Image (tube, rainbow, N blue to C red; front, side, top):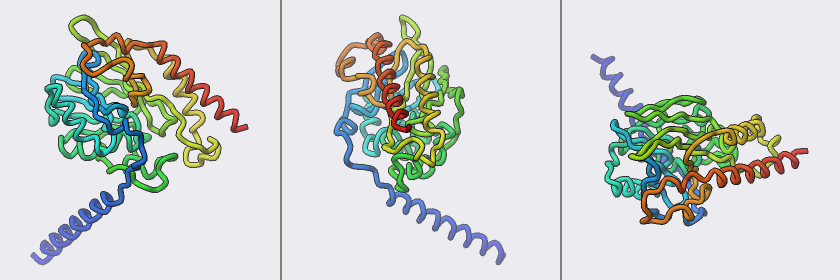
Length: 295
């Protein structure tokens, strides 16, 4: 009996300290405030192609993929994006609590800010590229470029680690995760098929490898593969085939010019292979310039 009492006391003490630790983690999160206004500006949700919907802000892209077994949400913007995303999903006629899977294209605060809160509200499973595990668990503190030892978002519970080429399955949907490192160690893109009453579409949600460090690549000691990873991602993205595409930021695929709130459903505006190739060419030029500076 005595031993049982002691065990209960120890368990209660452990839970108390666990709660204090979680609370401390929450108070230590410092999301940057000096960010573009478009990151927090509401944007009317709309159907992009088939069962793919845009539910993010004016620049921080969040994507809802609906299925007959619940929905998939990709990217959650800043912490303050939560009510915008929730309202957008419901405005489209879907239930927020039907979110079953959460994904991110990169483990930076501008895409992970509301992830933990949405996971708690919906009970959704969070899946992430294996190379982001440490960064996610630290709330961004261990990110090689932006971390600097400070958590910029609340860590979400990881339910599945994804590897290059893995499939995320829900209902009738199958998404393939493509490991596209550089911007972060586990940045990734998603490739999948969807359809409407007229035709099917191969969709690419591309994570563009923008350079976020001011250091020479050879000085980024916590990420010795950085130069090689950027080169790999640029080559991989250039070789992909798709019908329509979008990216982690609305500005990266020129959403403001392609769609205006109230426009009729028109997947064709997101074909734009020329715009995709142009964006990649610019990123490749930036990478090559960076590599020249290494010498």
